[in-house]
Image 1: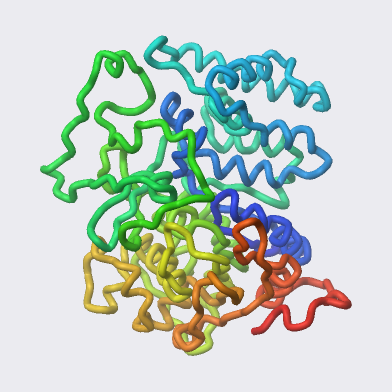
Image 2 (image 1 turned 45 degrees about the horizontal axis):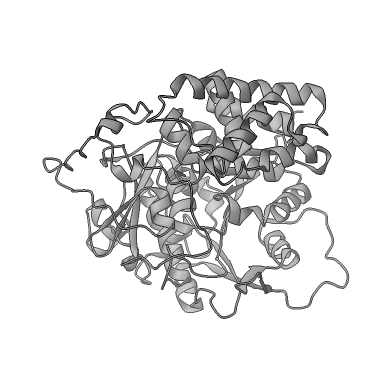
Length: 494
């Protein structure tokens, strides 16, 4: 008699922040003896990704590459080192170093076996040919400054195969990442660029993920389709530039954004209200989620909303059409699911546990928010995925007027919240978003406090791997592993 495959664990995340918890998630999946999947957005338009998008178009691959490389096992360390490598931070030295990469003379190639080396190099050579074909000196040439070799490989493989998923599979294969155990799934499977905008509570709009996450002046996008932005003035130089961006694209999306800072930021002028996808002219669009992501969610026992940028790493995956229905188990974008008090999401066909990991600090995107605000943002994004505005419960009917400020209120119903969040894992300490257990209890969300410690020069709170692993095992079910002897007392409080 055939046995059904175990239901898996799905992690919604971005790139760098959640990389710190990869070992925790992997151990949890190993103990559960189930597959692990990461769903990651493709709206990143900063760093070296911005130059690849300018010249070749295509998805923002920075976060995808970051997770794939983080998953490469120690047995393939030389390949991991190569894909993690960035070229020099100045254009001319970077271009010179790139030539040593494609020629095979760079020292990074020395420890890599010949079969893998030549396969990787063939994709980089293909990309190099495409770079030369698109060059229009002196007005437009590729800027190699701080280019990630992993990003360059994924782009070369995508251009060679014509498939984004194929490029991901090839990097996984070369890097020794077992696809039967762990999968990295782009939230949207596309060879085209997908950008996001953030609407602020003061009515202004910021366009592009990089501008949302990092200091940038808001770029207003008129809501009136008859009042479109004035096309930018062209110059002799810009007339000679041939890139992958359509004419009259929003300036924020067409300007290179190679140099960014993830450690320093200035506050937003107003809290973020909502996130949506746009085309290159700034008009709102509603793309569907990657069918593979929806299929994975349908077979998930647990979903984890990881730490990181709430509005630019988590929300862009949740607002995609089909995701809200998959999380709630409604089976339809417009259907709702009702839960009795103390009910289980699994009864509606959705994942059994939906766990939000609360960040250890607030950032540019979440300044002033508490834990209820984080939960409200997740609920709002997932409901918008279904074409439903959570504020309809508060006599609001327009999706465009959805505001997370109102979803921070306990007015959200138990049944709505439980469709998307069943557990909140959090720490305590200065700088950690405040947690109101009364609000969580009213929503039916179980709060789990775990041990954390201050790390880094900024002293921000970070999860203790052991404590977080124990909390996740207690919620999801930790297989056959016994509780470690001598483990820290009171690291988990349910």
